[in-house]
Amino acid sequence: MAENGDSRQNVISETAISWWRDILIALNALTIVPVRRANPPSDKEIATAMRAFPIVGLAIGLAAAAVYSAAFNLQLWSLASAILAVGAIVILTGARAEVGVAAFSDALYRKASAEERVADMKSAGLGVHGLLALLFLVTLKIALIAAVANSREAAAALVAAAVAARAILPLATFHLSPLADLDSGPLTVVPTREAAWTTGALGVAFVLLFLGPIAGIAAIAFGAVAGAAAAWRLRHEIGGYSTEGLAVVLSATEIAVLIAAVVIR
Image (cartoon, rainbow, N blue to C red; front, side):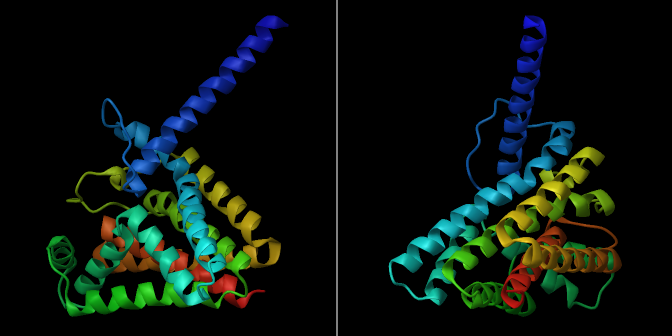
């Protein structure tokens, strides 16, 4: 009996250590939070660690919700609180999604081949279409957060949107093909099947937890449709995914979940 107990404790300990390692890898991939590691993770480690993306999304969403709630309790009106919450996400993530959407939008509106569009996305500088897309994206997120019925529901919507947006990334990379000349990085690795299923299950669970059954189901449906549509557009326009294209999938999912939180009450 004692040996069985020790064996069970070892399994639990190894599982906890494995998840903690994956969370740190995911944190490094999705945020600018410094994570100390003796050696960079291997592709195999990243492929498994992508299961932790929804947990990092949860942390990002909770941080934004805390900023929103603090600002709202300080008698700042909902719009100002929403601006601060979106600003917190931008700071935590290094504006990777916003920069990616701007770069993709600039390349998309150029009448060129898929190869030329990919080259455009990698080039420095922000064009008119990218600037307009960036303004539209940030403004729409702020407006949707401010439009949620009350501060508690707005905070919950922030968390649900952040989780869903990060949960869909491993699913997108699992079903799409990376571009041949894609720069190496955490998002260039195809997740394991187990990681893809796990991230989907965690994303659904967290969204339902924070939005409730009715709004949660609607948010999952909205987010899935928006993410799938964005992924289809990537395949159609450039033949696969790039880090900029994944930013579009993330942002489309995030917006869709926020819309669901506003319209389903």
